[in-house]
Image 1 (spheres, rainbow, N blue to C red):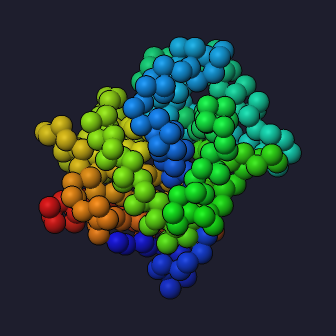
Image 2: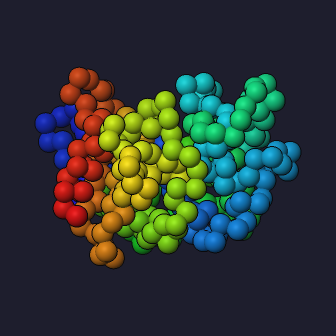
Length: 280
């Protein structure tokens, strides 16, 4: 199992230090909900908010709100808010404001701010903080999560993992994904987006609970799942292996202060996928 760290220094490989995994955090939030509700019965029915009854938890967890909040995400404003306050009201109000101000359809739209709303909804539903649940996963006992003054994780980012923790997380994640194998392609494939091209032009990509599920273009079968985080950070999981503990999981993380340049390896998922499928 590979874990590569991108650094600006020559050593550049698996040093056991905590790294900010950025939006890979969303994949952990999504799987926490799945682990609590494996039948997906509640998540398809329960609204995201009492005031937003036409968007379900599942739609929010699968980027199906129709509301974009990626390029428009006010990162510095959110950072300032989390250092002073509980960020739930801020996140809820921002999301509802976007919802009220835009015409939308239920389709893939990458949204950051809604994941902080989901963090609080998890506790309301299941009676514990989401970060507490994640730290009970074997190997993640010492993971840390950036959050607000009341200890609520950001949701959209902030999960801090070492390489060894990332490997433990990937093993756990694969188990949850395989338990939901028949549901991985619930929503339509992503088109006209960097996320739709995440694995290269030979594949289709589908959103599922913070993950991106990969199929061949001509075959409707999940072959891999990818968690993606800025900048060029990935956890890639093969879904074809029959082994309980697969050897072929690929992880690429980035040092927090790494400055990207022309040598970036953002084609990691495509390279990994080619090697993985060649072993099947």
